Length: 100
Ligand SMILES: [Zn+2]
Image (tube, rainbow, N blue to C red):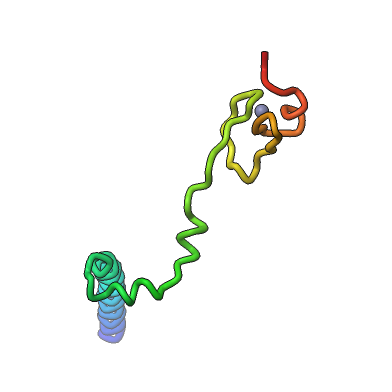
């Protein structure tokens, strides 16, 4: 029985340590983010931020939304069909043209 209690105590101790580590890692991540944000305002760190490329941020940038001239649906510009008359959500609406 004493052995079982010992193992339970060890297990609880390990769980406690794991929680502490996870908590510390979460805090480190938050602090790193805060430092990065504040360093953007720091003129001394400007050279550092300028050399960094951020393609991920560019791909996350919101795309221009256009409106279908026939049904009024809003859709990303890349998915729209553009003609000299306007932008459309589909070939069908491009053929139909502006709704009368
Ligand atoms: Zn449409």
